[in-house]
Image 1 (cartoon, one colour):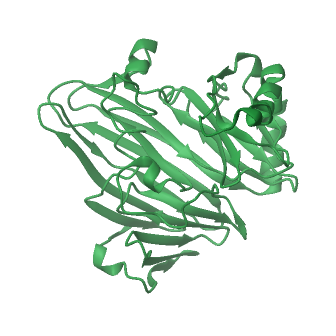
Image 2 (cartoon, helix red, strand yellow):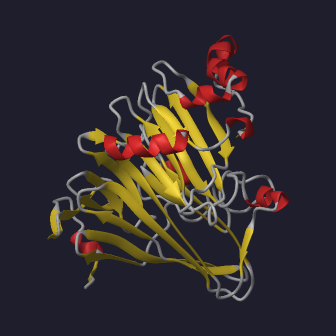
Length: 354
């Protein structure tokens, strides 16, 4: 029997407050100094700090004592809508009527309306050894669109994996352009390697620009990693100490689905454990690999499952990858991400490389 607990903003205070302790899972509510409400969910094997009212992000994540989350300049989430003004979380929903970097023809915000979307309702669903964070948010624009967003993040006792369910319903009276990307931001681990079933010969790499802030005499050193990958695409799979990856590396991959309709990607760590993403290419046909490594940031978008490339709505329309939801139509997909123990990681890596 599923027990549902409605969450209310007033229970989130600077002092931590237990909300659930059952089935091997514990959840505590608190509020960051910035004012953003957070729910800290401990499964025994993993810990995930979620933001129930702001995009239903996972701001921070741990597998045991190891921090999974990217390194950034942000030490806490900030109460903003703009994507880059509070960007340092482990997982963000991206998309809506657009996604990615908007081009000159686009009117959508960077990565769409979802990342810091304010939620009207947030609730927990306890079912045996599983706790789910769910909620409801709407985006409405007069004479344009109206859609409902109902995500769910499921956490299981004894597991450091998260199962995400995404549901978007067009509540307007006309077809609605729609894009989605699951932005999972791991921290790269020196000595690790990236494993999946994609063919590197088909790797589509976005041409990296060189920011004007770099001095001319730095250009060769800055571009060294990108030049190595241009000569040998498999080089990007080796996470090596001293790698400097700026500008960021962005590539599109299309790993095949297995017999269960799932595709997988791993960051296989030196100790045999792994960070992992799995998704359904039938729903999310493109995988975006995003890597950046600099003094103030370390991030590995191992495989960001997506409906289209992150180049904005107009580019997706030209490429034929822009989806439309008819009035009353609902888009639903599921995917999972987090950390795997060595025995599970090893078996999966062997299958992918076999």
